[in-house]
Amino acid sequence: MTDSTSEVRENPRKVREGIVVSDKMNSTLVVAVNERVSHPRYGKTVQRTKKLYVHDEKNEAKIGDRVRVQETRPLSKLKRWRLTEIVERAR
Image (cartoon, rainbow, N blue to C red; front, side, top):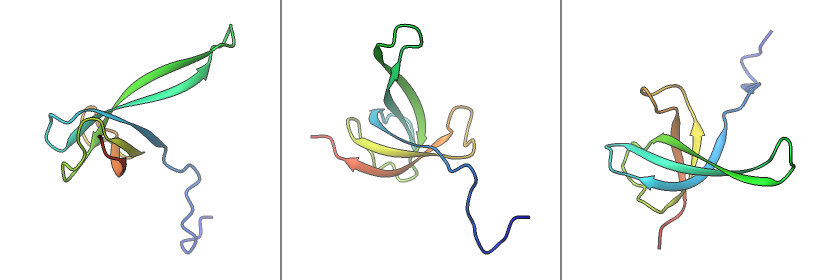
């Protein structure tokens, strides 16, 4: 049923943007991603922070950088994301 000429993914990989919290590990970053969610009962908008373990092959991102990450296959016990680009360097 799938046509090999049109490589369109039915469920594209998730992309998130966050701030690097830690770069102490080799080729791994910890990125804090904030999301604004409406509270299920009260309707108030609340901020939730999620820490993602991100694969950074060249160790190019540093603490405080704003980065864009993409979902990928499991790379280790905790790593399921990889660095796609550094949006903004830390000042």
